Length: 195
Image 1 (spheres, rainbow, N blue to C red):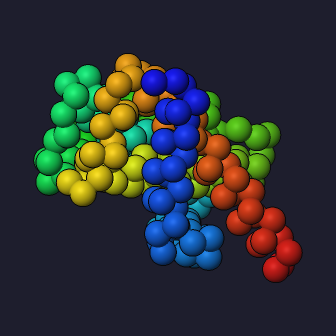
Image 2 (tube, rainbow, N blue to C red; image 1 turned 180 degrees about the vertical axis):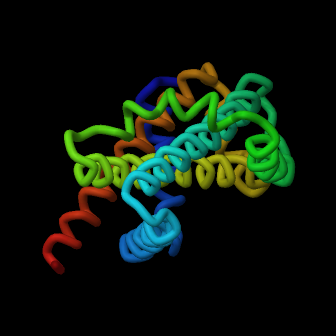
């Protein structure tokens, strides 16, 4: 099967995913603003808030990587894991993170990505944008895999098994990053108009 067909299938599945009610622009905007407001409130200072953003970005990258590893496994083995197994594997991550030096070991890798800007205000604004982008990409990846693994969809999803797992994952990530960027651009332009 061609790369064009893989693009078409990936876009089709993601199109179905983001038509779900929780992907409506207002819903996403409210959810992201609420989470950021809670983090800001719990932090007490902009420095602590920025570190909290870094901590969350680090966690989300790990969450996305875990989901992708499970998708890769399915494609390589050419079989679908039960949705319950996927959900269980994803639910184990917080426990693994809390029982290890996960944050101390991994936060430095993402610090440069989050801490951009010459003032704390610029860094916070940039950190919020990075967090929102990574959060949307993560949620899209997880929703895509949930759709991919759903027993009613497996016949349609078999076409993904014809590709190398890296090609499937790269294609999925490209689409998720593009969609996330477009959503954030739309949300930000709407919020600027309202202010």
